[in-house]
Image (tube, rainbow, N blue to C red):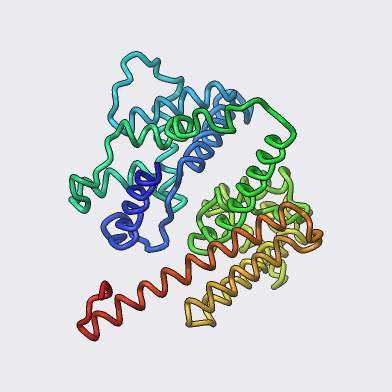
Length: 334
């Protein structure tokens, strides 16, 4: 499993190095399996609302469509699978969403790497293996017989809760970083709009989303536009489009100003090592503010930030070694 994950990482690194061959923007981000599924669920709910008036979708329908979509995109046989209702519209909406969000999913990246001849045959991943990885089958096989399949006990339940908290902490930190890189990433914004609590619940997100659709812009840019208008006191603040958002001025202002703070660090600190560390430190303090030191979420955020900080240091050190070797003519291996 570790070796396979490294293959996936190598493909993503290839995409990062050769991004002009994949996209028009170096800020294009990768849509992983979780985000792919989340995007599909949201789009299915939207299509259902357009056709039936309800912004809902059953889990069974989502999973059925998810399975069909993966087989379709990977070019695998789905003869024994029934095509989901409105599949053509959903598939079109899915790819339009990725393009609008300045994202590429894992399947697109893999297929483009192979199509452009950027990956050797030894490093190629079969469609079946990629399907297993994205759908989680590989994880289940790896964990077969482990604590995950053991009888539930208080200790096991505590461990599972800690895993959930760690996943939440990672998702929050990574989403802030993703939005910092790609302001069109609506999925990242959905994860962190109300983390920490800003009073921006489901109603605020829905109002913001509707306003962004009316303006044909990303949700974050819509929030930024609204807050800038409020701060400047312009006539646009009186627009009926902004009416539903006026109840959320405080929370949206807090969110936008915090992202501004992170962007200022990127713009003002030229040393990437220092900038990366300060961004992570600022995010950590923001996420744990108001929580006790013994809070599991605080501990999880601390661990995630430390891990990322070390990874940034290692990446920069590695790049420095390569640069030094290229200027001195000495191989890094020596």
